[in-house]
Length: 244
Image 1 (cartoon, rainbow, N blue to C red):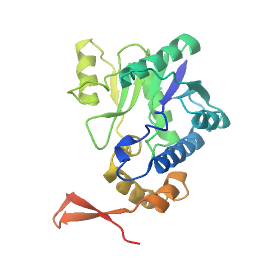
Image 2: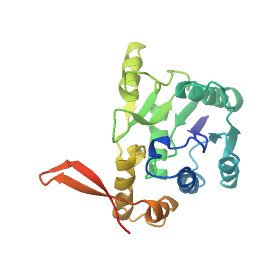
Image 3: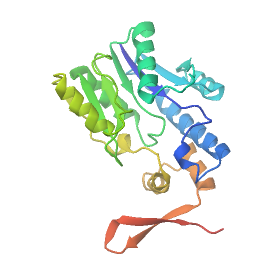
Image 4: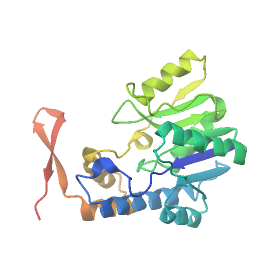
């Protein structure tokens, strides 16, 4: 039995790295816009037995129920748990309460992910012990599938090694052989810092996804654009504040 897991940070802490770009109220609206877009995709997905949303906020949980998803309230601990501890708690729920034989973790800010991506990842997980989608902008992980769910712990909280490198290293150390790397721009693009927002806004237009809630939010609220610093180098750019 396969389960899709989606942990979502409390709205009060969601996307905190974007605090210098948006107000707290705007970040809340961005989070809800991303979740509505994701919910629309997940509501039509048939390849997972269970889809679990793990969050502490009533607005998110109510929206999850509207999309026909399982909504579980996260019990916030003081002091706060590490991200790996939160993911372990969610994974344990999937195993113990829903008898999950496979789990796949995705994140809210994968704003370009498609139903096809998720179906392909599920198919790969049926044939492998671990499926990983590398994050586009870093040596991180955007999607992690495990078969069985407890075959390896998550390693997002390693203080020194990026999660992708840490996961591959640990998998080899414990003898996991069947590892599949899912290579996808759309499944690997996440929104974490300001430059991701600006690039996302342009990609929405390029991919003809201007009807999404997230694009509409960015069109209304994003006041930045991207410019090259060096005419011969597309990787050396700056963010410019738009004047209205």
